[in-house]
Length: 230
Image 1 (cartoon, one colour):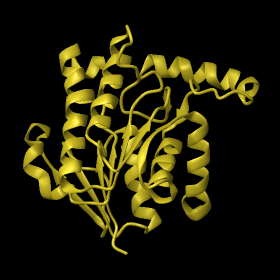
Image 2 (cartoon, one colour):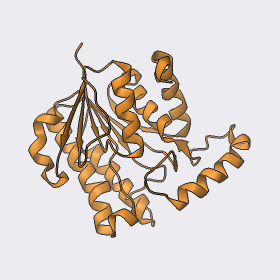
Image 3 (tube, rainbow, N blue to C red):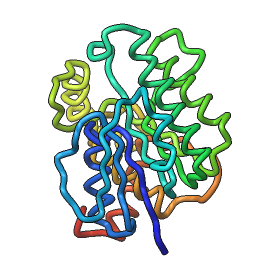
């Protein structure tokens, strides 16, 4: 059966892993990427298009896939202002969800945050929560809200909060294995494995929030089916 995927935010920490895993597992006949700058990958099944995100609505045909992996996101430092941050992490993500709905996408996986809450007093959590609410309102067949805490992995830019959180988590992880520990930092590759695992072996309909312990489950399913990529 022909299956196609679209990755948004493919040059980011989670997005890069998603592209690699999707191309390597051979479950998809085509992997599409809409990006502001070229990805550092060449593959016969990769279809890449560099665009201006503000012209996104012109790319409706590119959204005609089975599964969308939305890894869009920025930081306050990169964005430069609250308005610019909200534009990327809320408005642009919801626009992508709307286009996916119009194109008949069956599964929409999106990276959110463990503290997402539309009523939060914290700006970051409130933006993520409003993004989740607006995506749910679209009525996508399957919406998977991936909710990691801090991410482990090599970024082009350093993030002090993630560096400190990763250090603390390594010290505390042995004594938190018996808890849900949703606040623990998680490797970005594990998050990507969980996203692909959820798309391939998860439910077909509904809204699901996937957190730390769930990452282990769906990443394990992916690794079990494609051990060469583990």
